Length: 196
Image (cartoon, rainbow, N blue to C red):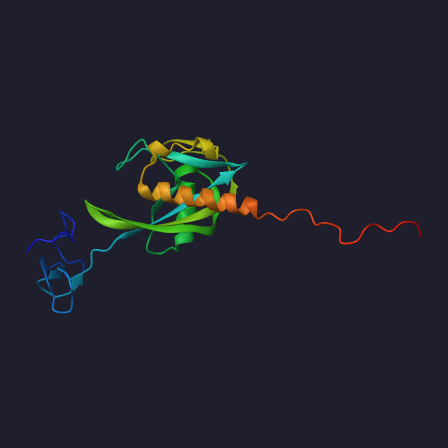
């Protein structure tokens, strides 16, 4: 049985009992799944969750060039896979510190983006605005370089993924909307009184 729902090189053994996994259509499912021949558990091959943070300082945002595949040499913001014992906010903050050496707080949500990945499980990308960035930029082992960009200088043609493009577009829109909504100086309701 062939399926486009499972990676070209799916796991071969059950993580629960070590039994052999076979792709088949269980009675309770609507698509083929990996099922253990021994314990009959279904192994769901689901998308991976990525958490990222867009860090800005002085009107510029920080992008990094990837030193790893896929898309080595392209630009993105700090992001990576969530660990099992952390929240998306914690993962985004950890990735910023690991990749560019900055301590940040993962603030308001920029957006949630998803895309299939032909050679592996798809990804669900959760992106936050970085708040209160502290420290100096110090690149980690997965980064070729990091640079602060003015919004007009974002290297759109060299961004790493569709999700990178979508998140930066939404971040810029939200930034523009916040600037337009800034309250103007309150007008005086009454003229100043003259005399005593």
